[in-house]
Length: 238
Ligand SMILES: Nc1ncnc2c1ncn2[C@@H]1O[C@H](COP(=O)(O)OP(=O)(O)O)[C@@H](O)[C@H]1O
Ligand SMILES: O=c1ccn([C@@H]2O[C@H](COP(=O)(O)OP(=O)(O)O)[C@@H](O)[C@H]2O)c(=O)[nH]1
Image: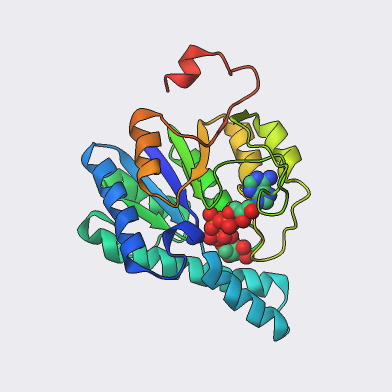
């Protein structure tokens, strides 16, 4: 089984606590021990947003701000690599070929961002498509995809399941500036739509939830399910 896990910066290292990074690494190592090929993609979180905010005040444009964001995602990736030790490739892969080759060698791969104009959500979706992953997991700071931003709207409802097309509609209005907050970015949603890959968005603040979702298929987040496959047993058996 091949799994790609997108670990938001806000769940990996909200305040750069090494204990939390260690807990995520322990989960990745246990999945690796189970014989699962694991690819991880790490976000920039609050630290990236702090840098982006400061550089925006200093006059940097959005592409320059994205590049700053990418630099922070790669720093966070190095934190996870530090905790993973020998099971991980020694530096964050900067393209899908390098990451895919490392996965084929049996290393856990750790990526950050790759190119301006997107987020690590799109990196995770593209890498998952590149390696024909069986499962893509977005571990984020909210318990799934909601009808509106749950941090701003008390009436927002969580979707147990959503089609990629409906996901695109839910997130289409979220701003795309560097450092923006979305459960999954628009490009990622379109990649999930075209690949039809099995995808889960869940609250990853407790890393063990990621482990349960991968090993037992149990989670309380949102399944992104291609239209028409909601009751297709072969889809859910993948
Ligand atoms: N429709 C929505 N459903 C879920 N979350 C949403 C939605 N719209 C906006 N958000 C925001 O998306 C963010 C997703 O997590 P984020 O803070 O970007 O963490 P991560 O570091 O995991 O990417 C949350 O801050 C949440 O408030
Ligand atoms: O391939 C990438 C990945 C990240 N980013 C930039 O880096 C920021 C932080 O990454 P991300 O949003 O994925 O981090 P998260 O908020 O999920 O922790 C993004 O907002 C973008 O500005 C980018 O331009 N290209």
